[in-house]
Length: 420
Image (cartoon, rainbow, N blue to C red; front, top):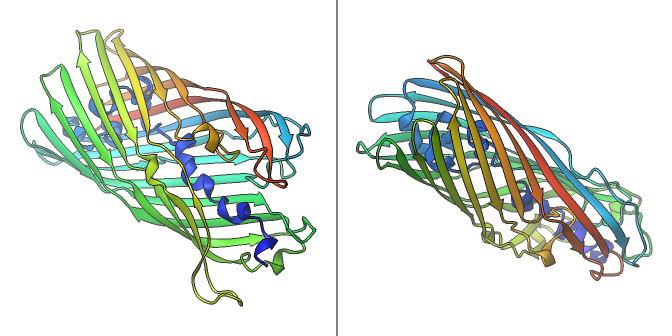
């Protein structure tokens, strides 16, 4: 009975669960920071939305402030030159990913001259990819939908006139739905699609510091811990033979770890008009060692047991960004930025669920100060990814697939910040 279902249908159905961050880590938590391609985000502290990147920066926010924003993410991923396990040509796929909104918001309150508290709401990870159910790589993935929402209580304290420290407690909700086709080794492909659903809520931590060398220059450092998730849900199958498979149609649990991140940023005001900034971030994808799926009771195996364990091979990545801002007049500020974003997926480990590659960011933004209390930010970013090849033609006689991907993303960010 174990051979009824291919290893992929169980072993990699959750692959996108952590891969979502490799190709779909959503940095877009501040329209103001996006205008600079997130250069200097860890040191900027220009409004309360920057607290996602550095909680200590809240000490620069006076009184009570509310920042509300959203980013409209328009990705494009096209699969061309698609070939099946026999080398036969398959139809190209032009619409694998879909546009979506990613909201964000922050509330901060200055308790006194030393202490500021805040609350953030962010969507730090997310992905939606969908192939036609009949495509050649269906055993590697058809639908991948992962949604996260994080609420972070924060506090910042000014130790000296130059040094502030901060901390946060990210409370993260994850919901995943992933499907792929299943193969039967008993002479039939009638199992249909295997589908997994699950969700969980877990907690991590954030530690931050901001050092203001003088009124024009500041440096920031921020660490966000990994969050160890254990999704609980169910796995099911459709098709005439699905009921015969002991691993389908039951409750399951799966371990999913979102990675730790270390960021360092710098901000320098050159004169009344110009400011420059820089950012480096290390994302520790290598903490994702394996993907283990645990089942519950079945007639043949009572008690919790390991359905499958898949070894992964992610690598730690670097993000570099440079930016500049120009104060046009007392109301308008222009923001510019470029960035390089390294992929966590090596070429040999790339799969149809996450056809990821290194990316270049090009950003522009505008800040408009409507009044002393109300400001608006808009930003546009174009992300060009290097062409990516998924070559699994030699996987086995049933799951082989080859495809060439062309990926890019457009980001439209907007926000308002109000001081009470």
